[in-house]
Length: 605
Image (tube, rainbow, N blue to C red; front, side, top):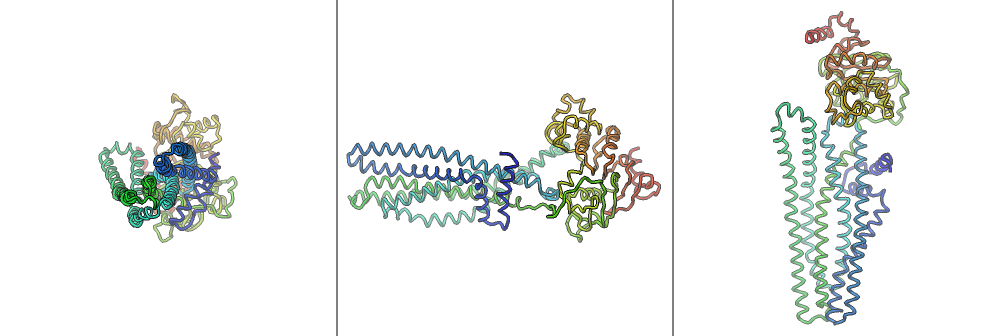
């Protein structure tokens, strides 16, 4: 089955689960996970029923062997019972093998769907979501929490059904064998019920804490390993180890709380089992010794009863232990639902249209924007009116925090304006599909992020159908071909995680090539040359001019050397455009830009 088919099916599974979160919804969620495989689920339950029934036969056969074979001195009955014993064992073995395979097959497929659903959902969420949530916590949802659900789906369902059938079957057999002995056995039920209720209430919070603590451990681990170069450079290894040790200790304490609960509850169930067995031995044994076999309590019945007592309390133990798996799985499902309930900050309008090939006019109409989402919050942009003609390169300069990157993010529709409109070729970006906009947009961020793989694969990321010749041409267009061809592997060189095998300047050159191969109509360069040395900057300047030619471009830079040839320069301060014009015009005006340029020129010199 293709990934697309699995994704469509998984989307259908979870689309029915929106609404208030409650325990019934989570149970429905588990059932929905299994719905696409209901045929195999039915076969699994049939195999479980056969295995459970076969497992219940041996104690009864043993009692019959004692009374009807050994005590009665009838060897023929013993042979028949022995054959039945072997037959029951064979049925149990075959049915158990079938149910083990089916449970694993269904469980792994269902969780494969869930992982894909979560991952696909993460791809849809807006940029703002990732600024509010740590990557490590999200990774924990896909790993630790899905693993907890794995135990619930694969082990929990089998245990629940098998133990439940065994418990009901054993209770029925006990009542059939001897009513008085069965009622004595059932006297422990009220104590078990009270203990189970208390255990359930106390353990619920404990298992929720374990999910939260392991997510924090995973998040800190991910951040620390991603930033290991900074940790080593500043000699902060001991501090990181200390902080990780604190998180690890908190995780241990949360898990030990569940251990303490289990250490009290499960031995108590064992003790009740032993107590009930002792009571049955005393009461039933007294009847046998008093010669009351005529009442129905024979040696065989007593032996059968004792055997079944173990079968009676074992399912109770298993169901109690299942509750710990259930609590852990439900806590994990809570976290998964929280993630799946996250809606993108930006979605296509119901009547959104496909954006045709654009000329590239960008227009801001009285735009104000706040990251808080309300006009009363601190504004990152205030009352911006701007028209960028098609094909013009507009450079944004100004102090850190002035609003330059925010303006570029609005063009890319990573956010919508709090007030006003942003238009491309007269289309309000809220009225066009996100995919049709992004397909004509190229972004080169400050950090040239690379994925694990080869240089060629990273350049081709901008266009999946790119040929090797097109990849080579894109690299040559921005001046990246020289260093690539000097590498032993050329375009097949592995870049390492996040491009760690390459220098910062080389990573940035590949980011330019990746943008070039996508042939965007709109281009955003966000501090794209900040990690490039002066020599490299000079080498790619010609490539950049080719890249920008004929395209509308927004260029953000602190290095004013990269923007002097821009068609227009905007000086942004405090979220407002305070100056605009060409380099020569702004220098002649001797305003804010001229002061920035003099400071930059002095520092370069």
